Image (cartoon, rainbow, N blue to C red; front, side, top):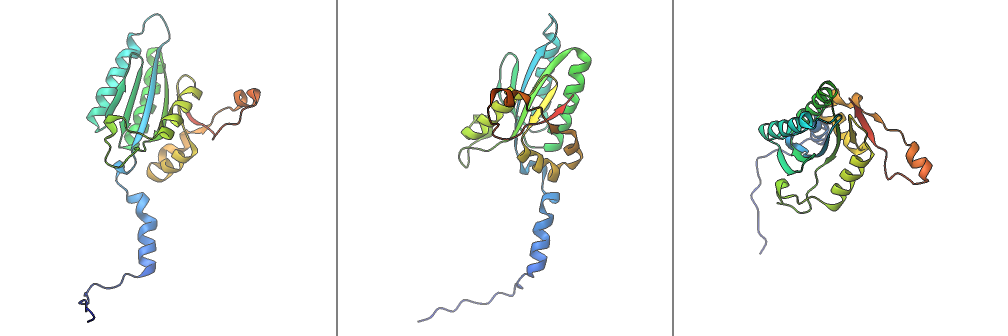
Length: 192
C-alpha cells in the first residue's frame, strides 16, 4: 500500500529570491558568527614593565565585559577568544595607540577560532592544531606595534567589518627570501 503524505500549503521558494537572500547573509550576519582567537604579547620598552602589565590586565577585563573569553594568561601574554569582530579590531587599534602613548609594545596575531570538535567550549582551549599553528606563526612574524592576520581572515573582515579592511597591508617578506624559505601564506599587518 502506498502512503500518501498530505500536501503542505507552503509555497515553493523562488530560486532567484533564495539566491538573493543568501547573497545578503554576510552583511546581516550577527557579530558572533565568527569567533576570533587573539594572541597578544606585551613588552615594556624601558625598565618599567608596569604600563604593559596594566594594559594587559585591562584588556583581559574589557574582553570579558564584551562577551569574550580569556583562554590563557601568562606574565606577558594573553590569549583571548572574541565573538565581536568590530570590537576586536577597534580594541586592538586603540591598544596600539595606547602602547605608543604609554611607552610599551604590543604584538598581536588574530586567526579565526576553529574548534577541534563540535560542542567544545572556546574557554577550554579545544582549538584545532592548525588554528594554533597559524596563530603562533603569525605571532612570531609580527613586529612591535603590529597586529598580524592571514588573507583568509582579511576576506572575513571585508565582509563583516569592511571599515577595518584598509588598515591591513602585506608585511615585508625579506626575511623569508633571505632564508630561502617559502612562506605558507602572506602575513597582513595593522601597524600602530
